[in-house]
Image (cartoon, rainbow, N blue to C red; front, side, top):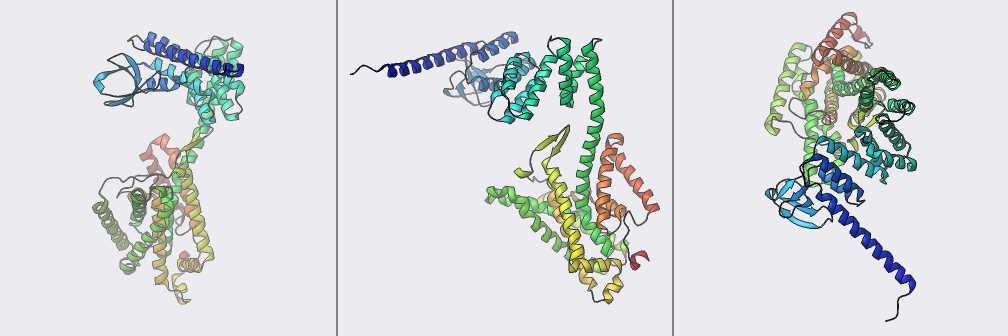
Length: 536
């Protein structure tokens, strides 16, 4: 055999050195892992430091398993292993990743840790993930370091900050570094500068950190107290803005529930106590659609709400037309009997749903495109609430256009303003009544589809909104869509601002008292309809 060339010898030497380094890492890691086999927490802290110092790529997985309670010691040979859970665990060697089969609960000891070690683990994992490719991972790592304030993360954080290009991640790293400086023995000038950076972060974590520093009479404590006062003033405004957003969210729900009622009440003068049950039926349509998709076509789950919307509209609209033709048409001009009849229908519909689906809540899933949340300043917004606000406004706009630019809408407005004159002009008022009741019920059905994403789907779903819906209609002006929109948003925001001050129940009572007093002053609501018959 010919002698190898110098190049081949160099390559062979390179791979030999790599193998030696890997073996050394594995040996260092295995030795460090043995240090965890002790009951003394200080010794475990030293062992964790040694595990990190080994530089092995498995360090993050090992520490994650330790934090999750899945790092175990096999009793037979005291080997440190990673399990997949309690009871009968599938285990692998912590140092090498070798599959070691399964062991039962009695064959291993768990490695106990305390809160200090948990914080240490979180800070180390945060440091290890500061250089991850995913910016979201780096952002979470910086935020975890800010919360843990472990000084061991100082140098890795400085190094990561020097390489960071993403603006949001860089800002989070600067805030985390300021938090470490603030809790260190740095000079007063540096700590006061760090206070300004921490103040810009805001939120509970920043407030808690500044509160720890604010005790004392030195310049740093004085700067921390001034920053806390500024954060307190800022939080008042952020809380008010958060309540306003919550109020708009509640207002959009009230708008969806009340807009159909505004139509039927305005055109027909019918107090429909079964309107809430149309909302309930729409929610159960969503449940049925999702059950069918789960069992037959799971890939379509993200489209389940889009499928349920037209089905709920046509089903509840058909039920509404049926109710009008079979019950309501015989009770026009007798509002008390209409109220009692529709209340009886609501009880029948509730019991029918209980008999079919049972009295317990039904699970309705959220599509992926409606899941999650995002942060704007100190305001947390969930995607499903934002989607419902936009959906409610879209329904309102479509209904407004239909009322203004379609033949049916023109006839409906004519019947609303002067029924006798509309009949004399050839409009079939009985047909308009039936279609209007069906339209109001159909809108209640699609409201149920939306409400299924934020409320429990149960036979009592509609009862939670019927009283509030009537308050919205009366306050806004019977039959006026713009009044319904303004009233829904106003009452939603008022409720959310009153709840923290007076409580949920007393807040609703105060809103009700306000509406009663307002109706005494303006009996036709905010936006009264115009017309001879209406004004007579």
